[in-house]
Image (cartoon, rainbow over all chains, first blue to last red; front, top):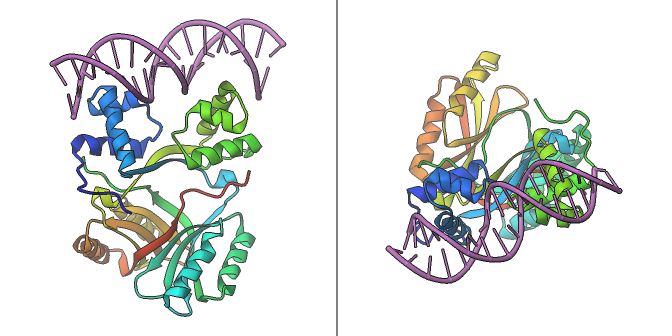
Amino acid sequence: MSAEPDASLDEVDRQILAELQADGRMTNVELARRVGLSAPPCLRRVRRLEEERIIRGYYADLDPVALGYEITFFALVGLESQKEAMLSAFEQRVRAWPEVRECHMIRGGGDFLLRLVARDTAHENALTSKLTAADEVARVQTLQTIRTSKDDAGVPISV
Amino acid sequence: MSAEPDASLDEVDRQILAELQADGRMTNVELARRVGLSAPPCLRRVRRLEEERIIRGYYADLDPVALGYEITFFALVGLESQKEAMLSAFEQRVRAWPEVRECHMIRGGGDFLLRLVARDTAHENALTSKLTAADEVARVQTLQTIRTSKDDAGVPISV
DNA sequence: GCTGAAAAGCATCGCCT
DNA sequence: AGGCGATGCTTTTCAGC
């Protein structure tokens, strides 16, 4: 499923990826200028990177507060058992909750780390209760974010 | 610092945000068609949303593995004290580490949740050691991701 | 605050190096 | 592989509703 047959990325490809990671709406002409190519070969490289799923998509980064989500929090969730059926059942359950934005299974058995958003404290409490009440769930520890000093998407790119 | 004077987003604005959150490279003509506007007013709305920092930017979503980062992990870091000077010192320290992609202060005093990427296990161990060795740090618990079943950027948008 | 036309700029193709 | 030139869209501005 993941992208790299040989991961044949030369320096120009890495520069393209770094530029598009920083500004995904840049025009191809501007991108070409920055990496020192003319427009057509630059576009061909971008298309190849998209086809090989090295570029997985382009997203607008929105202010959660402007959209009514005052709270971002994480939850460490421990399940009743680490049987695969139960792990999958939990994953399927939270997949359907729009407030759960990320769900990561953690090494060590039966634990998940979730990232959630909530409109306010009442909404946050309701979500925590809904997690605690789920059949598969044994314990929930919420980690409420009170300040975020760094929030970079993606990965570092050394060009 | 955050964006909303009145958060005057009508239904069309929300639709625009939902579309651009899903595909940040969509042309303005296509966006206008989807939200039922002609191109010029649609572009004006997008510009307004950008100026008010409701749209904070656009980025390409890249495959970490293709760029050589096999491992994503989280770290729960407890500091020696919760004095503001020590909290800031820790934040400044990790701001300079490119492998630390997110740094969130957690309610309850002196704890941080970090998201990090590493090229391999050796790199991950080195990062964990570097965290443990930092002056401000009392304890580090790494939460290694073994499978991610949901990884949605942004927030849910009810149109 | 929208529409429609027009100018400028961009994406993209075919061909050449 | 990269560059050039041509074509059809897209973006962007501006007048008018």
